[in-house]
Amino acid sequence: MVVGIIGVEWYRNENWEEAWQATKGYCTGATIGMLAKLVTGITMFGVFTVSVLFM
Image (cartoon, rainbow, N blue to C red; front, side, top):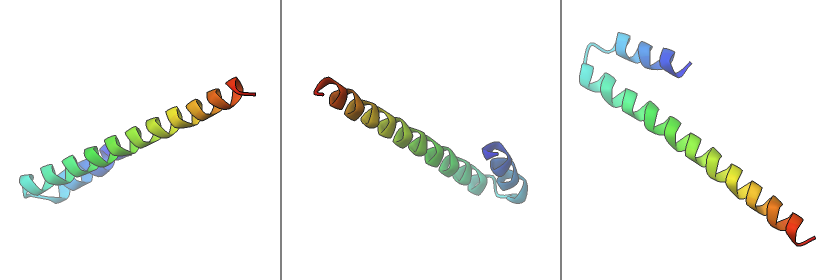
């Protein structure tokens, strides 16, 4: 899906610099999203573990 979006950006833009900026934007967004999910997951796991330990 993401690859498709990036492909469309590169195809539509003859301006390679703009396409590259767009690609970097998508990649940065995806990375931040993944990190946020990871942090949320770790936090939830930590809360769960602590609550189990103190019960």
